[in-house]
Length: 378
Image (cartoon, rainbow, N blue to C red):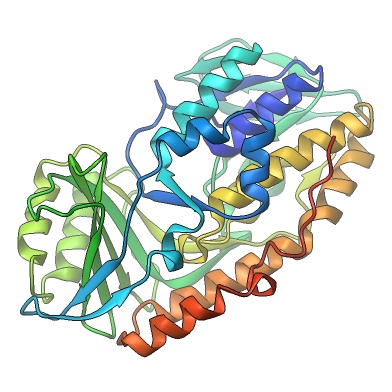
């Protein structure tokens, strides 16, 4: 089996396929494991997946230990506090550290990785898929799994153009790393205009650094190159220039950051996640958007279920793909609802009463979108 993408979904499904006796190969376009990005959190079944991989304690060792986030006005005066339970879940780690842990587990299990290459063409038939690569010679596989994110090349090649599946949520986001010049101690601070833009900064790496996040509204999709870093920086500066507090200093850090990530806030919605011998997992299949706070958990769970159903079906991909979708459709729909709601309220003028009410609601297990998801043991 060929897996496109060496991120959370790719390495997780690769590990479980190898665990079940299959022979997965991962092809990753980047020359090495990707660095940077935001912190991600887990609840419920996602923690179960990590535990069944034998990784839960190792991941806990990388926990950010993040506390509350203080909201300040343009002059830096605090007026509200976001409890950490609202954004850090039961366990929070940096995405790049999680990817490194998952990669290590997959390699330990015997998974082959090919960095610095990508799929350029897929020719499926009844017996397999002929794959053309950017650099390596063509090769044939029994199945191809697209775990290559919201901008999936596998999805584009097998299912059609990206615009057929992308649903824009009306805003953009950017993340970049900087020094912890505010002296944050496992905590965050944020500001915004209560209408169009919100900026936050959290300490990371045991307070040795900090990561800045900016979200801003845009009625329309913007025109820029996906890999045009200077354009990304220019847009972020323009959209946050009116914010006060520490915003000017944090925008200056864009000049020296090495890990800027910038994209539209979108979801991927598809009627089916498979086509013949090609299947999608993680954000490639059903991105819920960062405003859901569920994307990484969804990737872990989806990868576990997909590999497990392939094992249960003894390689009968048609039966496995049907069971995979049946198990996760409702779960994905609930997560995407959260993503839509999150993209709407994130810009609202925050109040302490609002945060307290949201935190109280999370104390009820039935309010968790994962509450009704029971993971089979494969």
